[in-house]
Length: 134
Image 1: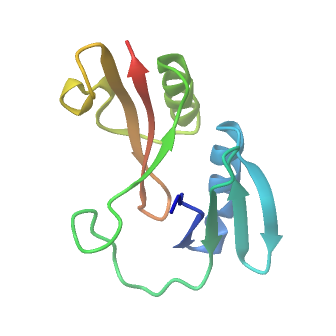
Image 2: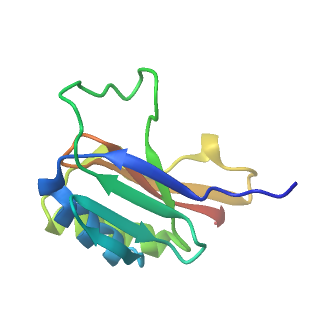
């Protein structure tokens, strides 16, 4: 069997749809659907993220049960730096002293793991990451 990630549904405040549309549009994702409190965005590899209104008032804890963060893969260190500049322009704070290289996550000494991490208006943790040759 050969499978891949198809989609994730993420509950949000629909007032924040613009943040996700703009961010993922900047990262090269296209709008699949927008309406009725729902926003679907698709990547070039056919994976999609669906942002849906109707979240309850419970608070999310990154380290609690559930998804810790959503990582979006980039093709280069320069792409991660470009995403970091975009976030700074939008007054979105980079977290955990990123952007930075994380050698402890690299698959070999010849490779790098370079990331920027940040929080969405719904307090969801996101990462834009490049993994590959230094």
